[in-house]
Image 1 (cartoon, protein in one colour):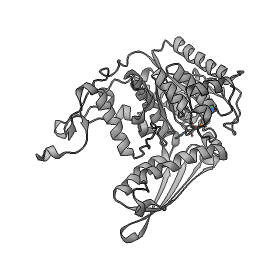
Image 2 (image 1 turned 90 degrees about the horizontal axis):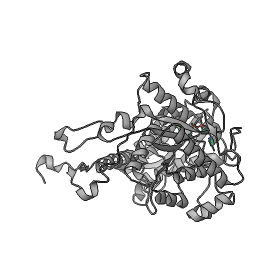
Image 3 (image 1 turned 135 degrees about the vertical axis):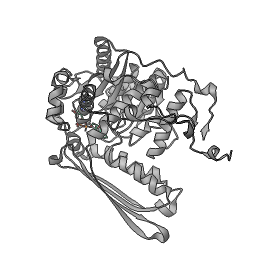
Image 4 (image 1 turned 90 degrees about the vertical axis):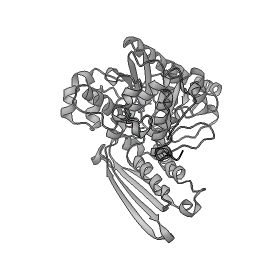
Length: 449
Ligand SMILES: NC(=O)c1ccc[n+]([C@@H]2O[C@H](COP(=O)([O-])OP(=O)(O)OC[C@H]3O[C@@H](n4cnc5c(N)ncnc54)[C@H](O)[C@@H]3O)[C@@H](O)[C@H]2O)c1
């Protein structure tokens, strides 16, 4: 049943300023598989060569009011989103390849398709990156900035951002981290407040990796920042503080694609029917550059933590000790070059039912990671821009739908269940437009209320 929300609360700036003007997209890691698949994909779709499959902003609908009203507009017609065909792309990478060369090397999209786009893709080149091999041990690239301190490097990034805006006559910009997964790190003293973090930048504190420098530069420049990798990046108190001060939306972490997407579809289903779990073994083979980076145990640890957390939060063993207090969860990623981006994932799930009788589920997902990630990048670009225009700032939990390790406010646990995440997202859109929120109660159809 639609629930009435208080009108006074609903009218937030009567949804934002319209999405007029030009939106820029800045991608750290713009030569990678995800970035190039995203950029080339948009250029292909603009030319009618393909469709934006996987993108909620382009293909999704939203139900308004009661089911009997039959009001189900497309999300993009319901809420003002920037026109994706007018996006302007920029970014940084440690390799100098232009987007055409990088997309060919990434090997995700067919050469014939890229051949049709060569003119436009060749003209997009990465700016020199802020890079530190200490945090991504498997890569060496020459397209790298020099600076005396990390603060110098942040200032160079901020200069890049304002030059990109000026040169392309942009009205707004969004930054999405599509760079490699950095080595595992936990939030520490230098991350605990903005003051300490800025001192750390000036003092070259070893606990500040490049992804945090990009996040700092973006937020400081008033640019919404989302993180597609599992490394902390903006997920530290210092940068959430800065996001509040600068009134900038932030989101992350780790695009929810492939095996984890499957997990967050399957696990809530098992839990809703009170089916027990004794073990979940997940293994992958992949051969792209991401796989090579994750072959380093320190980068893998970051990914592992992100992938493992999902089940713990979905199954809530403390609330369901008979079902989930003693399951074994293992995640493996194996670098296997012949597969390139065409990953293969296997899941063996040991479950138990009535009286504890065991059963098994096997999932063999032959997926294409970057094909699943590209539409997420598009949606995040458009929704992060929407958030900025709606004056939503700080952590955007309503975008958890897109992440393996959603950023959440202090003292909150992340919501991993894909269907709850989708409801959160669509209700946020209704809220922004002053529409009634859906609870799916439905009793009024039967005159029971
Ligand atoms: N492909 C997916 O489905 C998927 C899903 C979830 C998360 N991710 C994450 O998204 C990120 C991108 O994935 P990918 O498959 O495109 O990886 P990739 O290895 O193809 O691309 C990453 C790019 O980042 C560049 N890079 C590394 N450090 C940089 C820095 N400091 N500044 C600028 N550029 C830098 C690398 O040179 C590389 O071109 C990875 O962290 C990956 O773990 C990907």
